Amino acid sequence: MKIIGTPSPNFDARPQGQAVDMLVLHYTGMKTMDEALARLSDAEAKVSAHYLIDEDGAIHRLVAEDKRAWHAGVSSWRGHADINARSIGVELVNPGHEFGYRPFPEAQMAALILLAQGILARLAIPPRNVVAHADVAPSRKQDPGELFDWQRLAQAGIGVWPKTISLGQAGHMVPRLSHYGYDISDADAAILAFQRHFRPARTDGIADAECAGILDALLKLVQE
View 1 (cartoon, rainbow, N blue to C red):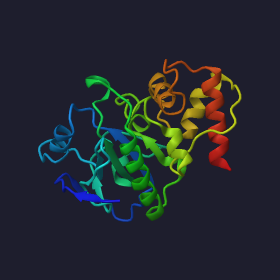
View 2: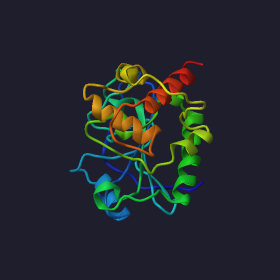
View 3: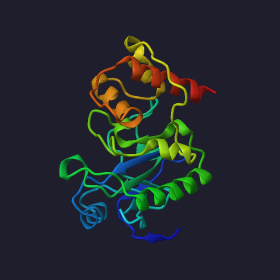
View 4: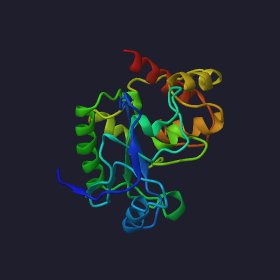
């Protein structure tokens, strides 16, 4: 796996003693790779990620893993804020919902899997902490979105995917979302983010029995 060094000035030191225990996946949401790379390298933009993966599978290292990249913004997971301090951020080139959202190509997914497997081999990141940008900022973000193949990643040992699913109790879903890790201050947004990740076939923001069953299966899986 070849990684191209393309340094960004947008980083700082992680807080002393802070362990890295999250992997956050994004899409760039810009029209082209060149536009995305320019923004992630622009000191005035104050945004970055550790890695950027082009649609052809080329991997760019923008920020060293031991530094804090600026990718998650205002975010929360499992009660923790400052997700940047505790995470590795990976951007996937994709125009996103604003500019013609499309599936993530095979070469890009294959490169991501190799990269993520290496990251997980180096760092103690629990499966439930491999998350979408939308998972940690549900009221602001929707990436990488419903076309991203989370199930394939889980099959490659990256993240988690439910096994056996039964219908659950929809009325209990929101507090259980909080238990799984979501910030539920905007419950509708949290439900929609969950659907984009774990039930992409229907993303309507409604807590139904199928979603509740998926969440029950996930909670059982991460507690095993």
